[in-house]
Length: 124
Image 1 (cartoon, helix red, strand yellow):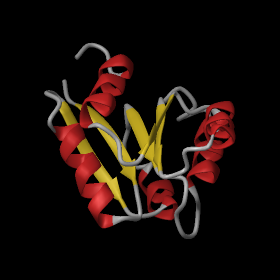
Image 2 (cartoon, one colour; image 1 turned 90 degrees about the vertical axis):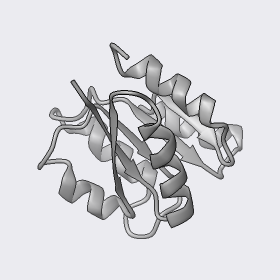
Image 3 (tube, helix red, strand yellow; image 1 turned 180 degrees about the vertical axis):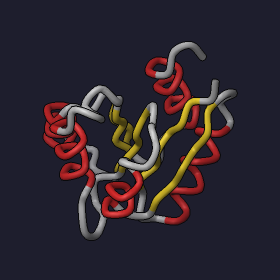
Image 4 (cartoon, one colour; image 1 turned 135 degrees about the horizontal axis):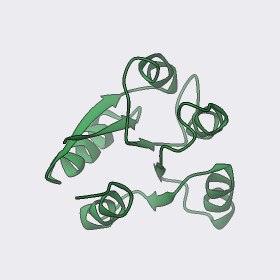
């Protein structure tokens, strides 16, 4: 069984770095989009086991995306990880309060993301 992880990140460099880290974990496939709007179009079409999102993005930001996902009965149980440049405690608290399961500040260590993937994607 392959786990599917949706990556929502507007920065091409960050998106590629996150995707490479995700796909380095055995049994995990990354599907990457560059905006919250694209993510909302993809969600009804496929089942994702985990979502990784940035906060600061054009159109729909990461917090709005989390809010939508957590209010939708089809996705509310999908774990979400925020990866962002926003390192203040109030940003972390807001993301976690909306329902994020994990929070990493850029630049992040790949092993920290791998640890979160292993924690939320069972069995790995």
